[in-house]
Length: 243
Image 1: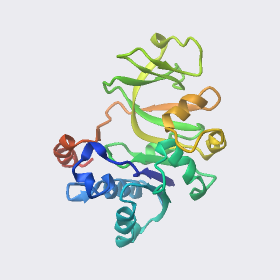
Image 2: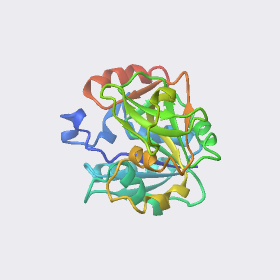
Image 3: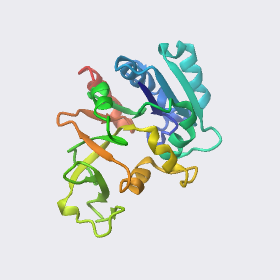
Image 4: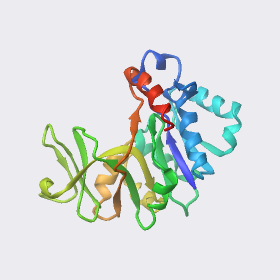
């Protein structure tokens, strides 16, 4: 198994902590966020991990090296010169992956109770599988009866994005994205027409008419986005449940 950790973000919502360190090294339960994610990936059978870096990039690289990359084949995708967003970051990292195996993608600031091996196995036969849940939010991904991605909507503004004209949102299944997904290298050629910087969800929405991008629903999903200062205390409690 191979994976990528999106760790290049500026972490602006975690200021002032991120004035002196990257979000990836913010500690929860005595360990940096990136260590929690790497440990979960390793226990799931991942052997190669690509980590993209930008904000205080050297700190992340040094931390990984000081810990012998936690016994994994860790490769760095350096975005120090320019932050590329999630889609652009994945595109830049393409040469670092094995071409014949799916890539499990995990945001560095996400804690969850999901069995990552289970998710990885559920990606077989699809070009991408997105872990989703029925969590309440303003923005939802839209899927058809076959659980294939067909669009996105903001329920507050009524905005809809879809490659399908006149998509009837009322007929779609609506789920919230978790920040964890599995991506097949078969999709990399479809990124050729995209700019250096773009979001991965924008990519999925653009190509879902021609690629098989499906939802994987975990009804009992417990997930926490450790993106703001007021979530750090909640994250400590979250980790106490063994997630």
